Length: 321
Image (cartoon, rainbow, N blue to C red; front, side, top):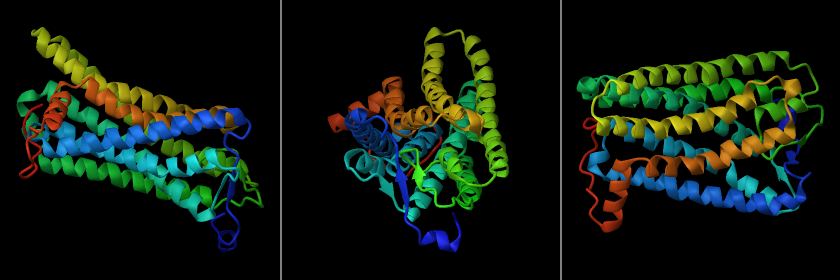
């Protein structure tokens, strides 16, 4: 597939939801709505976090990175999906598929690591509040964010390259609405044991190790919160952490099911609806989850709409938890 003669071949036919033609108008409306909500919600979070001085803390720095990730991730997939759901021709060019695969893998992998970094930030904020500003310095926050992005790019280079090198022997009918690794492996006309091994190994790093670190962090957080005597402080700590934990459960729940199951048990029809959920719905859910359950963000939004938002005069990450 990644060989020179393959580059001149036509692209792929994305069968997608062709077996459910009656659902396509509904899915088109759902994808369009989710995409618009993703754009509005995540751009709002980025702008408010940048302009509002009280939000210049590590938590909102990482949240801005997450919003940027969701924006780019959905944008790499939603326009092509809308075109295929609306028109009779459901195709994607070869290079369009390559770009989509590399981009979505890189951004999805980055989000796996970034969610773990955000859990670390919450652990330090709750368990070591007196040392929070010193530990979560601007330099460390930038390094952690950079490491998240680079790890995603590295995973994409390995993952996508191994997949795209598989010979397809003319198989171009992709039973999916996007170019995704499990669906592309089904097209290969050779043994894919090595690819499955690579997929499983990388999945362990991103989909097992990262959630394990998150659960460990929240284990310490729960212990620390239960020791807090003030009910108001305890509620604030739980409220701040619950938003992140909700996003973690939704994101990892669907993606682990997609990538950690054996290829033989992979159901294309089931996989497409799961993919639709974590590629389109989840990025649209993140902004309301973080804003509706976050007092600081709600206050910043009120200041934004009232015209009293604190203007940015040099970004700093230190400050309040």
